[in-house]
Length: 184
Image (tube, rainbow, N blue to C red; front, side, top):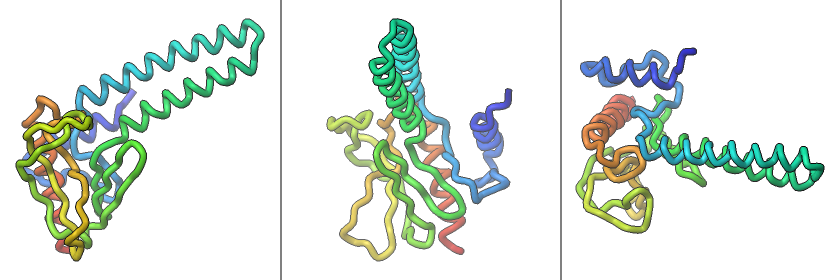
């Protein structure tokens, strides 16, 4: 069974000399692979959901349909949270850059982007309140001096913790998309 999300990443890794290796640039895509922390947490959540679903089947077989429905609902919420966790991150297309967080999605068109740069600053460790010194990829919007956007990528988030090379490649890819489409 082909896994298209892995094939696109292999095309990106194989084409180091091409900044934007994708044929259809109108599709939203993440220019990096999800990190092991993100995938591990999502896998544990799906494992928990499988146990909850098994419990719901046992409850339904025991003859309490209303309780089974509640437990099925809990399992559905856990699966939805795991899928949303896997969707989180920075996504790019010819239309702009999209930052997907757990509860919200922010899209900025390339025409509104003044610049994309990597800076050394305190960043949140795995999204927790604790901050450590690291690198962040920041997006500057045109005409918005007082508005501060959260970093698109950091070296200490779920995708790039202990993967500095992957952070550098992802930051370079987002900067390449910005350079290509801000000119248009």
